[in-house]
Image (tube, rainbow, N blue to C red; front, side):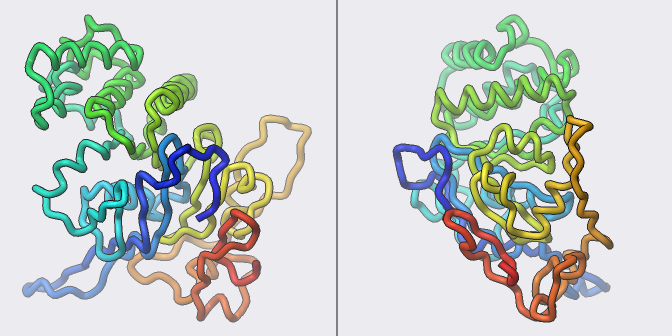
Length: 330
């Protein structure tokens, strides 16, 4: 794995994912026979250390959210290995997973639908403590009040319901809920994409402050490269279920090695109208994950593709010190 720009003192990763696969079977007919599969995640590997943020980026439908849900074991993996603090949780039962649930939390994309409208904000944040039996009613209320204060909400709002909050405030409730069990890793599944730009900055800065205070590890999933650049230490670029480039953020933005990464970066608007640059417009549509192309998945849209790309899948290998890319031409 490439080195991170902000190395944590502890070299052992909080999360270590090896060759992760998630294939959703397709059934048809009266007998419900399997006729195929959706190859949502097809061999993904990465690690995240304490105090580090790994940004996972790519087009919609590339498998980013499926990676996040699978590493949390919200969906069961088809193959590969998931380790938390060195312990393999890939095939553990729901009962055996319970202690690890405290270490792994998630912030969802939609700050409204992820909150139960029938519960008060205080009960929502305190529910993980109640489920895991970590505090009685009095202590639970005290801890929830402290969490509200830390994420920028007033203690008086604990009795309010989700519809009484703004979008940014609802996402702060989601962050407080994720922090309730004092986890080591938080998966952010596009946590700011539904918010106004000014509110996005506030929430991102809050997450970064919390990371510094608590040594949190983040898997930050987004399609917004500007947001990922702001919060991440390392970045993994996904295309059709596979990671095609993996490095620290500075290297990725200054010297991309995969043609797909180049195309993504060229599409990012530049705020200075005097700067001119050539856009690399991709031709065609993203292939179906039900029937992905043979060889390199990107060869159908790549302007540099050669015959080898159409028949042989490139391995994710180090093409420069600390920079991995899955491309035959690098």
